[in-house]
Length: 187
Image (tube, rainbow, N blue to C red; front, side, top):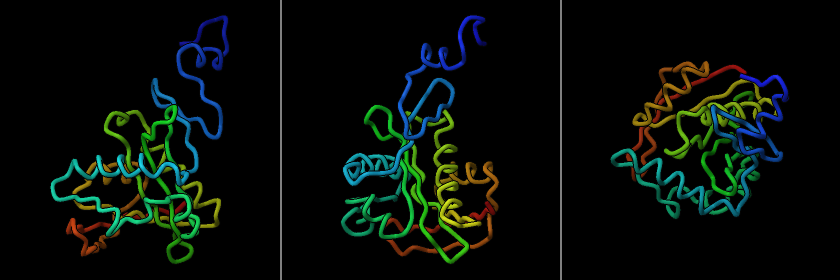
């Protein structure tokens, strides 16, 4: 409820941490800066994704063997022709998302991860929407998201955001023995 004396911005400054651009998003009582990933974010991004994967038996993050892009994420996503974003809380990376080109007009949503401590505040939704908007701005009209069969929370998120299961799946033949299912959405 807004007071009768202050503006909404004044109240946000009183009750929330006020962050400067690039992009501000809030969910409940939380506010994050959504910004492009930097290569200097590598260590925190590896820790974030490793922590998320460790919640599922058999999911192994091997940066040297399978996920080398994490060593220089900004450089890698520039080379892919995509974009990658992080949710930054005063220097702490709480979440990530991005997109890579697929077969035109299709882009693939990638790397949607949120720290356990930051979940249930709308951050994953903000990050997926940021990746979708980046893909749309780059000229893509459809997106797909492949999600490990073990990541049921992500499946619910994609469904809630208007993605439909396509019925397709793929085995990655990786050290985690991952099978992914495909979700798709028109932008």
